[in-house]
Image (cartoon, rainbow, N blue to C red; front, side, top):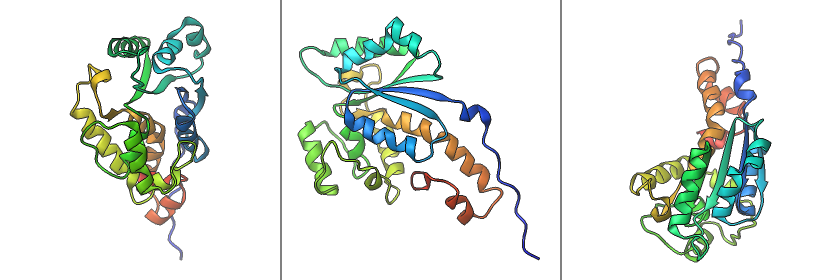
Length: 227
């Protein structure tokens, strides 16, 4: 008689109802995060790319009108670069960051550039570097890399995602979290991606208690990140 397995656990309906809105300041971020939406994240989220500067984006998300439009969402995220220039001084960036957090907005900033998060999938980063250097390093790992390219598949091979999370956490532990403008290099993007993946990780944990590991792996569309 064939061996019987327990039925698969049902997803928590409360998790299925979670909705995020994510404001990003560039197409690179929008392309990358769009993969989580198309590959099975059980959190429903909308990505809004306005193409405005970092400090303006943080302020924009805090505006009363914007807060009203986000009323139906469980959480509001802003994904942005440090973008240091004459219109975005350290004080302005830090003030905008604090204001956003005080308004209940989660901020996944990267100092100095979002591509730092990509690079951490491949190697450790110990000191700050120009954006051009980050791009050149990425090209060594991904020949022909450009900002408009969807490199999601490259980032999820060989346990690279989990390595990136560990490296990003290590960087955050080495900088002053109260001074994000000066926290170079650092990135908090992993906090967002981990939250997007957390329901699937809980599902996998339940599945491993009820079915063979091979069946569990085949049942998850984001299995590469969760290995």
